[in-house]
Length: 245
Ligand SMILES: C[S@@+](CC[C@H](N)C(=O)[O-])C[C@H]1O[C@@H](n2cnc3c(N)ncnc32)[C@H](O)[C@@H]1O
Image 1 (cartoon, rainbow, N blue to C red):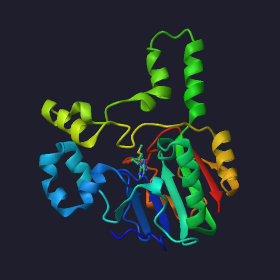
Image 2 (image 1 turned 120 degrees about the vertical axis):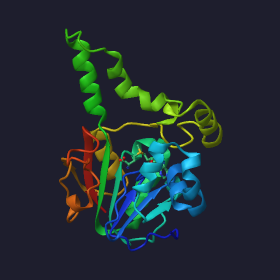
Image 3 (image 1 turned 180 degrees about the horizontal axis):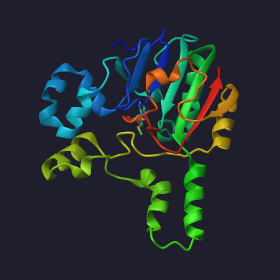
Image 4 (image 1 turned 30 degrees about the horizontal axis):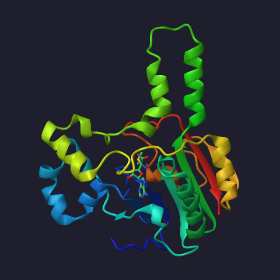
């Protein structure tokens, strides 16, 4: 796909494997597995390069994928996009890059266009941690509550790599790099207050919190991006905010 998403109805940025074929949507990510999926020669060789589970995931990807590093900006003209959505992507950007990224979203959206963000909710994880710290319940280990806050910031190996066979694991880490290089680690986290402030600071208005599946984007649920296979919340306990350009 050519590197110009101008005119899209919806951009699904940092899409990962969560893509949609809906008309007018462009799914964008720089992940190595999407690179494999969109390069015919690599796609055919995929069973030899990646594990079986990943091959299946690659097969299920939509066709309208653009491979692009969004820290370089958004590949679309000014005021040319109806709506921008990104889920669990913002926290993977360095803080200064995140500010530029938000400004880029403001630039490409048409006036009145909607910016929808889903991120892991820092407040939710902190409250769960404190609740468990204060409780007398010893039926669950406490460490996972700390892990929920920190694991994705400090992890070295990319997701799924540790379950590969030994040689594939060594090769993957060598060729593809660690979790940080692949954009998998969290560089920051957000709660509704800090994310609202960031949106206002980068030129957005009408900041509003939503529940999953509810949106000001017309026919939002038809895109299916926030649902799992059984119609539940794809990323439970996420924080959803929308704002207008
Ligand atoms: C946690 S995944 C979320 C994927 C999907 N949006 C979801 O909700 O399941 C974060 C995604 O952001 C992508 N990403 C991180 N930094 C990026 C960048 N600079 N450019 C493009 N994609 C990026 C990663 O490759 C990864 O697929």
